[in-house]
Amino acid sequence: MLTVNAHGAAIPALGFGVFRMSDAEVETVVPAALEAGFRHFDTAQIYRNEAALGRALQAAGARRDELFLTTKVWVDRYSPDRFAASVDESLDKLKVDRVDLLLLHWPADQVAIADQIEMLSAVQAAGKTRFIGVSNQNITQLRLSVTRSAAPIVTNQIEVHPYLDQRAMAEAAKAAGVAITAYYAMADGAVPRDPELQRIGAKYGKNAAQIALRWLVQQGFVALSKTARPERVAENIAIFDFTLDDGDMAAIAGLARPDGRLVSPAGLAPAWDK
Image 1: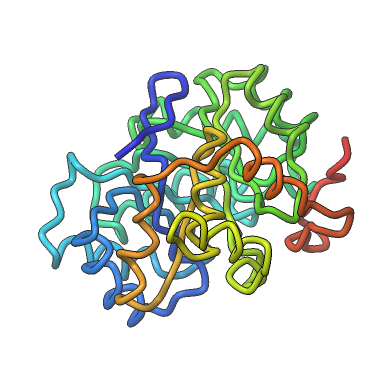
Image 2 (image 1 turned 135 degrees about the horizontal axis):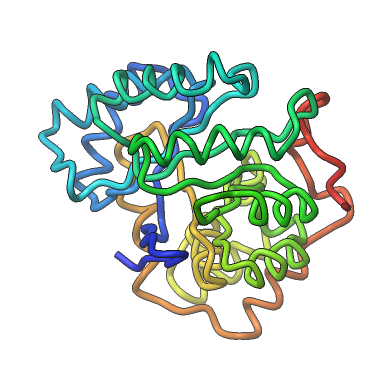
């Protein structure tokens, strides 16, 4: 599979996310994801399904050296007495000695970014993750993280879909050598129903969801796909056999609107325009 490279990390450009999935759903769909060719799996402590993902990968006989595993530390563990211990718990649940990528899940505002980064870097230095990154940071926070981190920040995982203009963040990340990982690519179900994306899809023999994922990957982003239905998994990964032309790329970007952001929880989200 195509990879996105940042500071030595070769991140598979299409990942399989398990946000809002029950243990049963994870253990049902992960074997299908492996069969379809997915090797990049994304979870988080707050999803409460790290253990299910670990069981599913082990039961399917997945080779650890072929996997790229990402998890995220939740905000209530941003303290010296909880951070490293929570990572140990995640590793135990995932049944691995280390993950490939460990992220700070949200910046919040109870703990200084510099202190968060210090704890994250310490865990990386201890060998519990190959690479480190952040999630849901704005441009100012990302620049601070890059400056303060002892190890390279390889990605900022953020909301990206056709209705949200993330060009400013993408440019800032590129300047810092940081990859963008895009979540919420389906815009909470709006993408598959979008007439313009369906129109473009018909041109390539693809559906609207495949068009949106291709649009993300073609910009050089890592895209996280998701489905709880095993029969849909192969469809999600079938985005590498066509290329969107410049006109279609621009048309999709043109769907962005001022109120396009969907994920901005109170108490966790930063001031996005900083």
